[in-house]
Length: 252
Ligand code: APR
Image 1: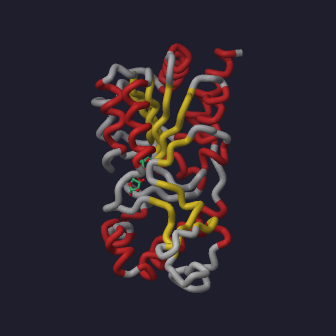
Image 2: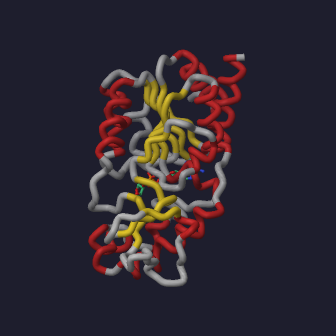
């Protein structure tokens, strides 16, 4: 079995050799920024039933409850979170001319904060809140949480510009992600359990169209040893950071 350093080297070489690379990221890439994942140890869904707090029907039924249980906490976590070495590593790979696009399931905006310029936000972004009556949007830090649910100036209820369970993925983001998956030469999958559809299909689509699929995760997933050609197991920050450094040396 190859050791970790060999796999880091192998991934750097594959990135350097590939014509077009995209990354697919999930909650695991932001764990080292202090944002808990959804599944697994310490995951949000250990405390909450996602269908109860993150389904659009629950939000419409009782927006105050969903704001109280989930969105208030997200508001406070995301307001202070900063990009970690994994977000920065992907931005460095873009700068080195290797990575074209990050497709992220995350709503935390940390890829853009790290300097990635082409980020597809598959599940929207928590940076904006939209009035359900008049559609006016507010940047999240300007939203007053002294009233729950927070309200628009018109009195309408604010909701995040995120995709709840039960809602469709924005059309443009969906189409572009699947096009990229079908056309890329290498898909780097970082910190996702790859169980939530339709994003979970992207690595499979990439592989079916001939791309090399490489996974970085702190533990094996159902992609490991199947859809992924090989997997690097460990912390995303350490691994992406180390790979980015080797790629930069290779380019230098
Ligand atoms: N480094 C690398 N991987 C990590 C780290 C880390 N430091 N910490 C956790 N992970 C991995 C976990 O092993 C897990 O496989 O990140 C993955 C996180 O999985 P999920 O919590 O299921 O997150 P994600 O795949 O993004 O979930 C998809 O589900 O609830 C919805 O809408 C939500 O966008 C989210 C979607």
